[in-house]
Each structure stands twice: as structure tokens, then as C-alpha cells.
Length: 387
Image (cartoon, rainbow, N blue to C red; front, side):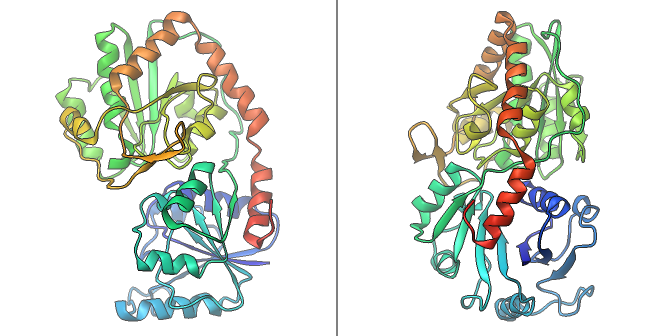
């Protein structure tokens, strides 16, 4: 079976990471990529290997000369059909398809963009030309159904990442110091101001804590400025983009996930693999990754985006609703309260429940995260067969 993957590779994110790992571990079929971005992120290029790759907008491969905008939808369809793939997978993108693709099964693979695609003619027309969808979580499936009233088959294949080759288990309760960590793109949706504010709140509780931030992005300068304004330069460390997070997870005691929307949460899964309890918002697909109270601390977000801006000076631009997994309804986006996060972390330390949480995460990973099963499920899903 020949698969054609259509994706934007300008920046590394969850979808890009899953594709690269799939290409490295797939055991059947052949794969090629049609890249709809005009360039490939430097952190992505290294891992593409020998996969055949074509740029959708380039007139000549390897040349920066591009088709005029008015021609691109027609050219895209021509380049797709020229590949003669058995299935065409759209990774979190909905390009303008002028008609249904001939002789190929078209699959939309949602990695969270269904939360924010506009409900307009382009989006609805795209989904009419799709044969089936793959959702990375139950939340993803419900959002697609709620927003776009889809009638095509939607298969839930929960995300997964490879387990670490080796890591150091946690053997001691945190004592005089605790170390927090967060790893993501440093953009507005990730709410990275919250982990910084948690350090400030823990300081008020006379708990010495440091924060390690792995990742890069547009908000990096503003986050560093916030750190300086709060006088936390000695307690907040910016690590930049990290290819391998095992050393990062070895350092930290708690992983802080603070987005306003998160369809799944791959970094949370990596934390669970490493025995690191997670503090996370009860939104979207987060509780599907981290069982609340067993492997981490799930907290209903209560801060508005305006309150977040008042505390951090950072804006969150997300004019859409998020999924509330408790009420199974859509709601306006809210942000974690750093004060409540600090209080809940303090309770774990006082009650000495940390090692129980850490051991639970390892047990949960062993019983629920099976990466090779995930790869086989994707292979079946891409072929149109039910998993």
C-alpha cells in the first residue's frame, strides 16, 4: 500500500512528531510526503531520512520559485493524483480541494486543528470530499462531530509515542527542593506563564522550587521578561528545543501542562513514561492521557484569558471553545489557577503521596501505552480498515 502524507512541516509539533516516528517504525507499505509549507523546520529535517518529499507550491523541486496563489489548489490536486497513492492522509490541514481525489482514499487525521478550523464553506466542502477521519482522542471525535456535523466514519486511534530506552526511576519523596518542568512550543495556547507563576506561588508557601522550560517559540522573549519582572531568574531555566527529553524528565519532580486547549498531550504521555506525575487542566483530551488522582493532579481551569494577561502581560489568542470532559460539552477557554496548582502540589508533599503517584504512572504506562500496537492501528486506519 502506498501512502501520501500531506502536512505542514514548518515547525515541530505533535502531528509532525507522530509522523516522523511513524515513518521510522512502520512495518508495511510505502510512504511519501507532500509538504504544503514553503520550508521545513531545522529540527524536522534531520529526522526525515530518505522519505520521498515534494513541496506542494514549488514549480520545480528544490527551487524557491512558487506557483501563483490562484493556481495552487489546482496544482495541489494534480500533484496528489500524480502520486497514485492508495490513501492520502491530511495531517491536521484542510487545503482547498477543488474536487474529490480520484482513485485514492482521502483521510483527515485530526491533531487538534478541528478545534479552530473556521466553520465556513471551505472547511465544510473539504470534509465532504473526505472518506473518513482519524481522531487522536474521544475529545477530538466529539469536537469534529459537534462543530462540523460529520457523517463519515471517524476512527479513534489514541496517540502514542515510543517509550524511553532507559530512564531513572523516582525513589525518594521530594524534600527541601522540588523541580517542575514543562516542554512545548512557547506560544500563546500553551499558557507557559502559568508554570512560572506557580514557582512564585510556591515561594509564598515557603517551598523552594525551580522550573525547567524545554522548547522554543514566539513567546520566549516575553516569558523571559516575565521571569525577570518576578525576580525568578535563578529559579526558572530555559533549555531551548530538546530532541531527547529523558534527561529533562530525570531532573523534574512534577510536569506542568498548562494549555488552554489540548486534544491529547504527548508531552504528558512522555512524563507518565518517565514516572513523573502531571499537573494538568481538566479540558479536551488531557484526562485521557493522565488518570486524574492516580497519575497526576487534574484541575478545572478557572482563570479567564484576561486575568491571565493581567498576571503575565501575555495574550492568549483562541477565539474558539474547548471541550469539557466532565460535562461533555463545549465551553469557553480558561486557564489554570497558579495558586490552586501550588496548593495541590503542596498537599502532595505534605501527605507524602509523591512516590505513590510516580509508581502509578509507570504502572499505567506499562498497561495502557503500547507503541507498536499504535503503529499497527495507524497502518490499518490509513488503509480504511477498522482497528
